[in-house]
Amino acid sequence: MQTTHPLGQLSALQQMMTQLLEPLSDRECRHSYHPSLAPLLWDYGRAVYLETWLLRQQIQGETDITDRVADIFTPGALPPETQWERLPPKDHLLNWALELQDENLMRLANLDRLPDHPLLAENRLILLINQSRALLYEQMLQTLVEQRLQQAEAYRVVRPLIAEAPTADQVGVSQGHYRIGAKGDPAARDNEQPAQVVNLSNFRIDRQPASNAAWLAFMQAGGYAMREYWSEQGWSWRQGVDSHPHHWRRDNHGAWYGMSLNGPADLLPEDPVMGISQHEAQAYARWVASLGGELSGAVLQHEYQWEVALRTRAVKTYGRVWEWCANPFEAYSEFQPGLDPEGGIEQFAQGHYVLRGGCLHSQPSIRRLSFRHYAAAGDRTLFAGTRLVFPPKDQ
Image 1 (cartoon, rainbow, N blue to C red):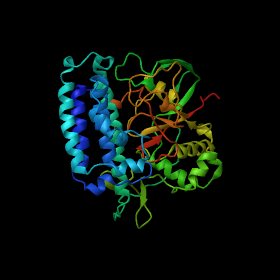
Image 2: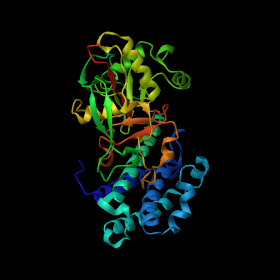
Image 3: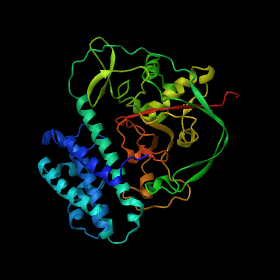
Image 4: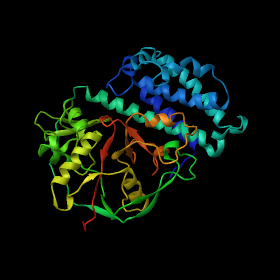
């Protein structure tokens, strides 16, 4: 539940994103630290551009500001490297952004002075802006973690992580018809709508996402080297990456530790694993299924199963890591494009997969059960883990 007015959340997000840039050099802000991540300056400028495009161009018909920078901050308008080369110096971008943001806040605080528009009902305009900013804020944090990963930092693990085989700690969800998606929520993006009724068979679902200790057991069992656990696409992807989660590193004594925004730290065995791709999540599920017993039949969760388990309160814990799902990111039945600047039918054409639940860095504006995040199956820079589902016990 959101505890502050959306306009207050927007102001806070503007400040948080600015504070990420302020202590960094221009070179650090415009450097690409990973092929799947844009420079910090681009994410920051994209957030300001979207905010201004929605408010001034779509609501007020003012195009002079957004037209001048559209080719830089619109994905696909130019090759990414060209867009990044055309980014202004950090100080210039900050001055441009701060001036625009102050004026935007003033206009948004006086909605009665704006022309009539469907986006102004129930604060929908501000809610959409907040969600776009929240996702770009997380991308900036991902980039900062990449920066830390590329810096040589001596670290000695205090409490070495010990592998623990996954246990059968699941809860059952009964067969039935369930509602998924957003209904009557002004914050809902078009990909969450319309609300659907789905028919699910009985299933069991893990109470918690896969843990660090269980993931280490997968690694020690040779999970990254065993072809039978991987899809054809996953195995091809696997050949170009390290055999461990993206955010894991080893100290000089061979003990695993994790890298976060605050630097290196011990990996706690019960914490959810983070920094894995959808390919890795699929391989882990097949390994767990091979263990037999109550773990037989383990598969990656479908997003419907995740949402129903949370809506029925069968599962009560989520939001520490984004959770990969088995299903591709596709439109719901009877989907209708809305006024979301990042929506439309084009969002489903990229072959991405769904993530649910949010992570520790997710802002209130995207922490709802119907929110659908998505990414390429091979993306492991996200703060993402996974959760498994199983057949009912009587099968």
